[in-house]
Amino acid sequence: MDKIELKNTLPEVFALRDDIQSDIWHREVAFERGHLYLVEAGSGTGKSSLCSYIIGYRDDYQGIICFDGKNIRSNKVKDWVELRKRSLSLLFQELRLFPELTAYENVAIKNNLTGFKKRRKIEEWFGALGIGDKMHEKVGRMSFGQQQRVAMIRALSQPFDFLLADEPVSHLDDENGKVMGEIMMEEARAQGAGVIVTSIGKHIALDYEKTFRL
Picture 1 (spheres, rainbow, N blue to C red):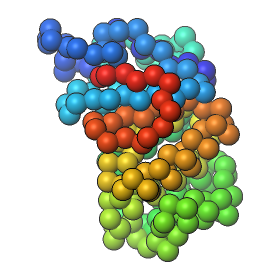
Picture 2 (tube, rainbow, N blue to C red; picture 1 turned 45 degrees about the horizontal axis):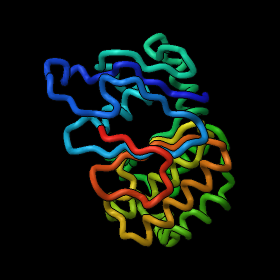
Picture 3 (cartoon, rainbow, N blue to C red; picture 1 turned 180 degrees about the vertical axis):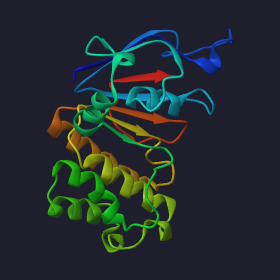
Picture 4 (spheres, rainbow, N blue to C red; picture 1 turned 120 degrees about the vertical axis):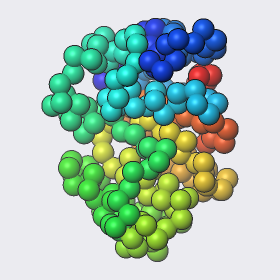
């Protein structure tokens, strides 16, 4: 997949509002593979909704979203399965990890679907992010910041044309946020992928090519 396009897209919950001030809602916007974007948003402006629409988890919006010119409303379940397996990866704001599983098991669930990354590389990422000693600890016993790092490793453990990172460093200190950004962009460049980062304030300090205000 090379391009994600939004054409006059708007969450249905905003349909009766006439005060929408946005670079994305009710606009024509394109995200292209190989480029880096920042979506800055206030609370309640639809940031996580945007990610959910693109990943296909929700469809309660007006307008059109296209992947390479194809309206995604025509996608079947099998199409979404393949897209989420090969083309789209999302780091959820709420993480959606399994608390009863270890950090490594949470990553392995995704990686085992594609066999995309060697265990050695995953262990390297755990170490670089300062949680090498937490690999075999249950996620439910880890801090939210530690869990964010596990969720990023999981998001990178698959092939993707676009990576969506929804508030990826909200609970990280600057140093860990910097390392996460470096790892994320190194993998994105290796895959020639586009990256869309969302933020309601604190965000990874990267050389964003375009910033949208939601």
